[in-house]
Image 1 (cartoon, protein in one colour):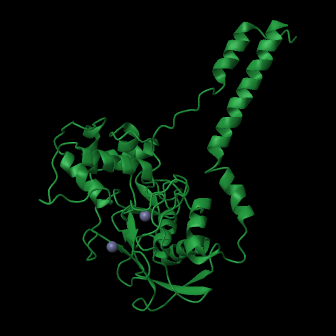
Image 2: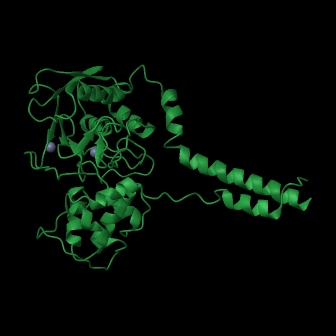
Image 3: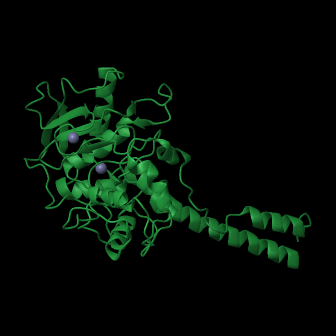
Length: 351
Ligand SMILES: [Zn+2]
Ligand SMILES: [Zn+2]
């Protein structure tokens, strides 16, 4: 028997162990976006907990959001009502499945937090939802065609750039982003001098910039890129793009490298993933860095292009286990650990 254990110690220890996994609360920075009046998104809070049968003024605007990102088809009359009907319920359900959220069919807090988060402007694909894989492709699974190893050229727009990040620094960010993808597939990226003939054309634009996908000001939609073999790769110039959060202190700063890495995935042919930790997940909070490819990203892109012969899964697995797969393992082991400690304590108290 261990005489230094008392009942008080037992209950204290019991309370201090995480028997129930902690609920993940929304990142406080995510909620910043609610206050940023870049679009109608900030006003979506009033729909919280709405479900089938409810009617809330302005829900037609929320339906436009769902339409924009591929979850609702426009009605024959080309307008939406404020009524939460069956059709909208199924759109919400598919959205929740696609974004890896609890599937309730209602506009619960997890769903609303996700809806107001800044995100990529590319539509989520809703046609290729399956159970075992989480990455997705665009319709028809387009990819760049060429002999392997392939070299794609990229260039920056001579006019449409940002001036508060020095060009060499900006180019280094893009080099790193491209090299993450080229380290896993037999595709090289090189910068071309000639913008008009480059495969991938990078630029920063405001509002309506002529491709039918207008940007919306601070936060909201951050960037978009087109599927192969289009190569257009656009950033919202209204964002405060950061290459280093130590020097860029804005609360709404967005990490350029994270968004660049995500958009290159689209340029290569990946659509949005439902794995939250994956680079190809559609949203990114301000002041957040998410640049490392996860197993889901790698599997998705390698199924399109094959593997880079120098790529080793083992190095990826080491870093990935601590992130995308880490949580369930950690929870399982903490539960077992808790049971074990409680068991020993009960035994010691009985002796
Ligand atoms: Zn995207
Ligand atoms: Zn564009």
